[in-house]
Image (cartoon, rainbow, N blue to C red; front, side, top):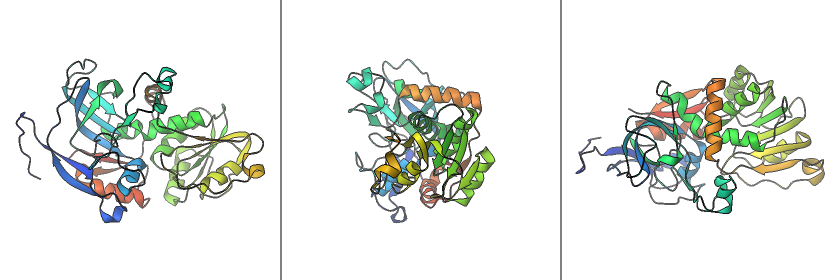
Length: 345
């Protein structure tokens, strides 16, 4: 694609926009040219080095998530370099390496924000949903919601940490896994393979249930105690379980696999309908069912510190930015091992 110079002296760039939400085989993404954005007060303009491909991006492209604006650019696992800063932005300087994640802004005033639960803010906005994301050459972000990242690490390694890692960590917290406990993981993609490693580092026994034979092999490579098909019964009762697959029919299966007082956390932003639950089989003995809604910046900072200490093994399938449509199609078909990542080209 030809590149023009804008009046501001910056190059126009490429971006993948959701132009017609629908099944991935209808090609809902289109490669477009966008004029460079001017960072507003408190904002930074980031040149994208890598952007993870999240299942939320797929939900947006296929219309499972109603678009909040026309022709939105997906992508919220962005690693890049600050190019320009807006008025009043002092946290980062040009040349700094940053991460741009899902949570873009909260009001800071409501009772949820004041209580440290900014992920529940009614006025929250999100990268790649309410504002253009990282399936592009450049992305705008608020500096107070960006994360400082080490300059020497591989961008493709860091990108999945910014959502798959952070939201998986939030789900692990919501699942109330006791020290040395027994964790079940349903679905084993980008987020699950990182969350499993955090749980294993804390002494947990991890049992993975997923339809993908390739994913089951990866789970065992990473140290899972067992790996079975989606609806298999784990070899021991579970203290906690996380449902990563966006399939409501899995929820009763996960609840039935719990020991007394166990907890199931549902990690996705979208889930198909949950079938009727049987009180005695699924909820009695004080079993708990919880949802996971985004994350706080504290979750992100805490997870990134933890990821550095554990030295997570991040499994990626990489694509050039020019093949973002192929990456989403492969994700939809379960052809991605670990996390799909778009690399600047």
